[in-house]
Image (cartoon, rainbow, N blue to C red; front, side, top):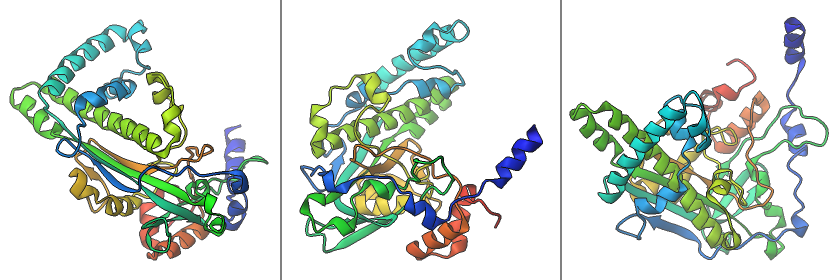
Length: 345
């Protein structure tokens, strides 16, 4: 049976890029009115710029991944009732709450973030971003990848560009669409963790790093809510904490390096548009890693049909097409997208 399954797996082939594009996400742009945001450009969230505080972020914390970092599997708060790990989870949570209170009260960590909204339209599998509503000056392009796996009839082969109205529809002013972006960070965790280590308190040193990660993700959630409000449709939200954690809101915020946008290089475009290194203090390394580690960045899509997906395996035809669009050597693209290639280099 295993051999038969392996043989069937080998028989599966990817669609050509042309075939996959023919099965793009079906959105009827003739009946859709993209929401117009109340502002365009960059807004900075930092203690010296706004009244953003750590206390603002605490209500947005998703605690489940905090326990996962300690290899305690379960969903908060149900994990406390687990007969095997519930007691340990409760003790860990109480210790984390005590340290979090100290951090918030004494401002031991510093939140810095930025988000922006830009006029945008899709061109094939790309999204062009414009300087202003005139849409005559293109300031950047985000390059996306499309699913090429064969799917059952009726299922689309998604690309993030599918969720932005196409440039070909710009003759109708109602189809002037927008794209958002953000970068957030929690500063000071490395230094605070080192202080605990100096005091031979490795336990709180580890908790510090875990709390910083949770606060960074909470910042991303908080800023996404502010963006949805600025977009208009977020003003009518009546979402509980659980609803936020389960992302029961309109729109998505995919990040470069994750399944829907596996190329980390897209962070460079985002950071340049946001002037993120200056506005947030986040440093982007040559390999597109963010420092400090408690940092999150990504894009905002507002279309109600926008969804998360995994690009999965892609063929060489798409790699060549992608490299051409990005004006890069094929070898450079193959190196970054190695986990997604359905062929050997």
